[in-house]
Image (cartoon, rainbow, N blue to C red; front, side, top):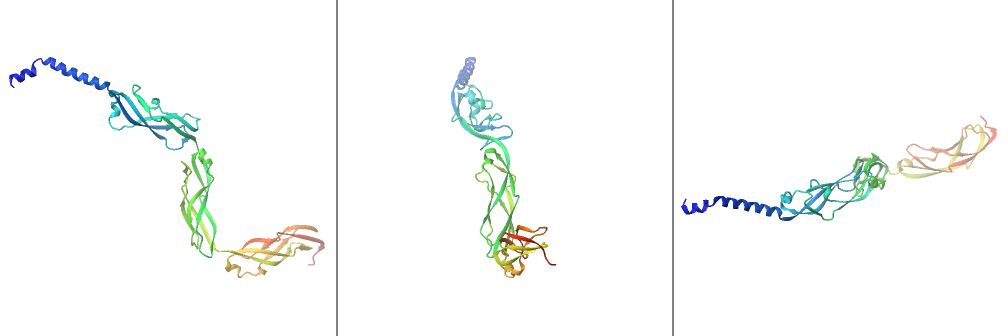
Length: 312
């Protein structure tokens, strides 16, 4: 190394080293005292007591600005780590509640940092968690094939338990299935369908799907038979009934009804154990198999029992 260069490097070396150290210290002090602003998001978790819940998400977000010396904001300048905080709802509080998010709600926040939260308020609806048993109703679309009819619908399960906010459940009186297309059916069929949850809020179902059994049978019609004599059965005395004839309407398939004769239908009143006098008795009927009784006219008759025994 040349003498001149050597002299420049090592001449007054202690002073040069001291100057470097002082410069570094001054730079550190200046950097530490520099005031910065950093924008961050705060993730606020809403905590409710056991047996309660809130409407909507339990995690809410707020935008905030942090202001302070660089030395304090260093942890917030590295990466995009989100700040965290909590709001605890005390027991017994319910309804629509409004809380302010502040530094006391934040986790491990240095009080020397100035905090500005934009729109610092959080509004939550808190209510008891409850359950309710709700009936299920089917929604049928279309019609069976010509000549056939819907006879019966069986839903399994017929009731579903739902859990959720007490206020939400109070508005729900029944659950409905998705549309079930029965167009052109000629025989029974079981459909597995989902229940509709739209517009019910945050409600949990014990079962989200049900089985709907659709019973399909031949189309049935009504047929009226008139002038059927009203008989008296079970009596030992002479009797008189008014009126003396009845009309009966029965239901069945066209194939069955076409072969039924009036003589196969009976209308009668039972006067068993009755003593002489006047009575009103319900009219009873017997109809052929594979038919259903729709109505009778009259429904009751006037019976007069005379004080004279029948001849055997």
